[in-house]
Length: 144
Image (cartoon, rainbow, N blue to C red; front, side, top):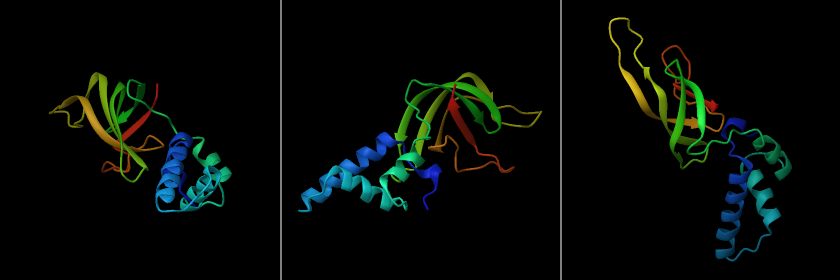
């Protein structure tokens, strides 16, 4: 069974199926779009396109320019997305955020280090796979 946090939104899955169909056509294999969607579903470890579509339907959509909120290194923030790149595995995005107010990324009373722009990697659920020493995700992003 596929992990739902690693499934792209439906729109991206359809683009993947189109690319798959084109590559197979170039290799001499004719395939309908619906057959490509079914094949893509099997590649994600589910029985059919309807199942994959349902699993992907709840994925968070984020775009450059969107207003977001969340936590960075345990500190709450509001921000604007300034950059986004889909990473090669398709399960993660690199997101550049510009915080409305700088965030202190140091938790010591005697020292501070403020950041206003950060870049992090998040899954389709908006949570980073990297964690702080207390087990919390380094970055959590959600629509504001």
